[in-house]
Structures are given as C-alpha cells and as structure tokens.
Length: 358
Image 1 (cartoon, rainbow, N blue to C red):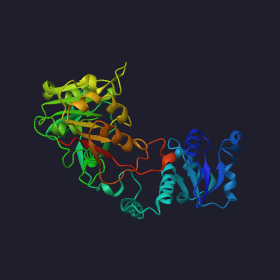
Image 2 (image 1 turned 135 degrees about the horizontal axis):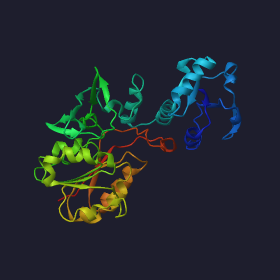
Image 3 (image 1 turned 90 degrees about the horizontal axis):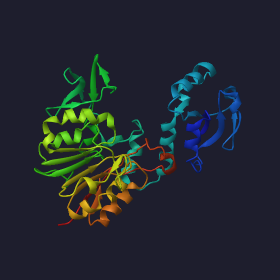
Image 4 (image 1 turned 30 degrees about the vertical axis):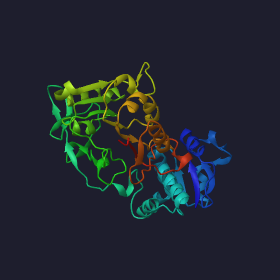
C-alpha cells in the first residue's frame, strides 16, 4: 500500500514520532503540504507541493489532523482532483496498523474483532456493543434554569453548555447506558462485583451520574469524585433528594492531598464496600492513595484499565499487593482516544475487577 501524508504540522509529527517503523506492507512515498515554506524535508522524508499528485502513483493520502481534516480533504478534492475514496484519516491508518500487527494472532477474541472490521466500522467497542439506539428527550427546569432528562425515574441534570444531539427537532441524549450492556468490556457490575442493599460505595469519575443514579436508593452512603467542575451544579441537583447520604468530593482523586487533589484514604476513614473508578488513566495513583481503606476493607473493585498502555497489569498488581484476587472484563476495547496509541497499537481489557477471598 503506497501512501502519502498530507500536512506536516504538529499532529503529523506527534503521531509519526510514535511509529518506530511501518510494516513492510506500507510504503511511505513522502509528504505534501500547501505551504511552500514547508517544502523540503520532514522527519527524514521529502515534502512537496500537492501538484506532485498529478504524476505520483499512490493508493491513499493520509490526513493525520483531526482538527483540520474536513478543510484539508476538501482542498484535495476540489483543488487537486483527488477521488474521495483515496483520502483517509488518522483512524484509518490506525486500523490498518492494528490489522497488520494482529493478523496472525491466535487470540480468538482479537480475530473476531478483525473479522468484524470486514463489514463494520472500526470503533472503541466494535462487536461487543449492539447498536440498539435509544434516546432520552431533554427537558428544561425553569426554576433551576438547567436541562435534564428522566433517568431511572429521576432527573439527571446536565451543564448549561452541553451540546445535545437533535432528533426530529428535539434535543436528545443518545444511548446513555450503551457501555453497560451485558456484553460490554466496560461493564462496571458483573458476577460477584455487585452492589448490595446498604453498601457504602465510592464512584470516582461520576460525569453525568448514570452509575450512581442507578444505585443511590440501594446504598447507605456514597462518596462521589468528579474533577470536572462543569458537572458540580448538575450533580448536586440530580442528587438533591439523596443529599443525606452523598458526600461530594471536589478535585482529582490521586496519591495524596494537594491543591486540586485528594486521596481515598483522606476521604474515607471507615467502611467501604464498592469502588468504581473511571478517571482517565489516574486509576493506579488513586489506588495507591487508597492503601489503608483497601487493606482494611473487603472492597468490591471495578477499575477502568483501558486509558493507558499496560494499566491492566499495573492495576492488577496494586490490587494483588493489597490482598485482592483480580480478573478482567471479557472482550477488548480499542481506545483510539489515547494520544499515545500509535506507540503501542494494543487492544485493552476495559475493567479490572478485584475482591478479597473471605
């Protein structure tokens, strides 16, 4: 496959800097850029004017910038006569690199993903989440001046600046629980990792609150951690009826207390029965900051492990150090949102579960 990269900006440098070498099936012909001041050399290869495309034999042109993709694509089509099906983006290159790396894998789960790509789009969850599109209509609370949807017979509020989807002229929230389907590799509650009546729980990475709102009536106390302050007022309104059992914790959950961070051991001095973490790769440090509470309790743990390369092993090692047996969710996620994914090209388990043997 002969490819040409269009654009030699920061996105191209960052992504190609992660790729040690291309597989033999890819031949990089060089770079093109509209800016004549950038013509010459870039990362050891020649940069030329897009006019060279008229005489160059290539299979695809790759645009690695997501921000300017549409603008750059239009310029290739309308100014240089490039066929639309010859223009590919960041994720197209990523998919090809995954397919090449794992084409001979003996893991049946990985082979199932590669087969799925033959007739379906590349995605984070691939075949593990069924496309059962559901939506909830956004309503408006004129007293609080905030948008909300009805969720589990409760109002779930959203920040004022939320950009909602629109369906038939109405604002909607689409598939809010799609990641929690029974076949999902991102399933928080599974097998013996469940929430029982009267449990004390901690939800780290609350976001809109779809997890806590499902279980708030069952639990006796809930510690909530959400570092994005956009959600503060929305969560307070969503959980107003349950304020007597909710402890809202501002700041990042981390190893120790700081100006903008707090540790589990500081916030929870006594009992804890269930811990869910989905905090954008900060899970290992947050677990280290919960050493005492995890040692002193038998906590059912549901810890996200897909944000960074090898987090599944790091998280498992930490929990095992505290005396927990661990296992992972079924299936793989392809977390292409990780800015470093081109350096690892790895499928990832979504959740590490942990529990002590009694």
